[in-house]
Length: 253
Image 1 (cartoon, rainbow, N blue to C red):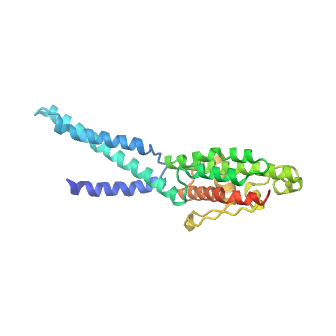
Image 2: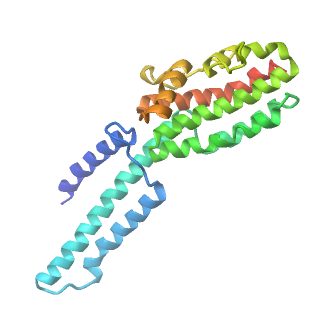
Image 3: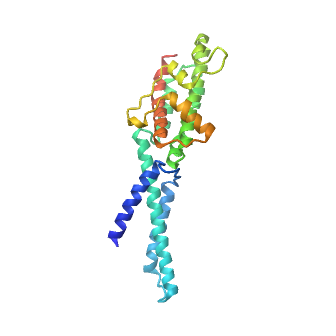
């Protein structure tokens, strides 16, 4: 029996690895706790044959087969759920995006931007960043990318307002002659920001222009489903942005 189960579970783990990256289609993940509940359900169903005496007939046999089926199905779901969740958490923690990352960064930003014009609005603009990790863990890669871009956009807008209020001549760095906003990749470049993505493999590294003018645009307007590499690259840019922008903004005080 063990020799039968081992190859099956090994295949399940391999499939879960592909599913965690949405390689074939978007795979939603219920998370660690609900996966744990399925594991408990499997354990309970597995113990039924030992604590419940089934009748020695076809009816008893059908009850035994039903509990056996429920046990294996619940165990399979639990393994897949916990494996997908664990792999996604491990992948984002590889770029230092752990559960406390944004909370810690908010404290760093608050301290670094003391005396910076419009600092309160900049700090409040970081609020939505806490959703990014959850979207990624659940397999909603499109929302993870959109939220990553949205956080950087709102922070950039708030920073630009502060800089312009202090020195109106710098408005040209953030707005065109017709007063329309410049593209965010251009604004970030004018601020002096350049993403560092040392933790990413070559295929996961993307440019800010590609992120905004291709990936984000297609998600917002054409319901595009980003690949794992594109999503991972977008989150890596966000992590780099969160780490480097406080020092960059200090130079604009």
